[in-house]
Length: 329
Image (cartoon, rainbow, N blue to C red; front, side, top):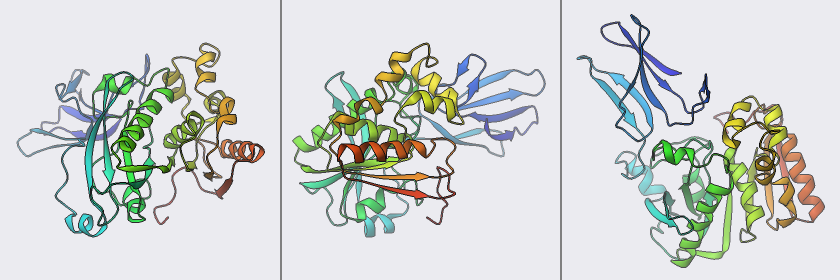
């Protein structure tokens, strides 16, 4: 429950139901919704039902009208034009995963002065979540660092693959019981298309990000040897121990469709640890020593395994830090 606001007549409290909300029947796997709680009769009403996108903000005007701010990826914001002009240009793209005909959107961030250029090096930046999305917006923080990567001469792809918010509840729910393999196919299909269109060169590919973005990174480098480098930030290799130690275990029971002893084959099939012998990608690992969501020992295991396999690997540990680094970094 977030962003509580009293209605003008004092009879209702408006609030947002966050994606990761535990409920009586299990776990809420929908996008963020706007709800109204009646203070008189205790009724709960789902507002803006016809809006299929993700609701990220709301307000009430002086006349009592309810205003919502929704997530959308398709229209380029007109603000921050000076920053965009000086740093990089970007555009939204749409592709189809030929395996199941799923329509996937994404954002391409071009290096400065190279808008729509060909044969560029590609860095795939995978958002966290999985119930989150990359937005066509300027967000100057450590988590949304596509502009920084683009300013270092990378073409950056932010893919809103299956499980991303902003495309309806059914799209969000498609990652259940296949939280890595399903979105992984979307990402690899996007790479195939960019290579085929000669937008990127096939021998200069990198992938990475943090938290669930790193879950996906660790998975992808076991599925293909095409990546030249990987950035692994606070990701998991084996989901049973992750379920047993993280601060939000209900996420795992929901994503995998049950407890480890109920659907053990899903926990194992989607775990990277049993497929690490396939990895050929040099990997830079980052972890926070005080992380209570994805414990640092997951990164230690990855570093030891890759070292044992003879894969170039480097581990950077931030002592005393949790998963979310301070803003100054």
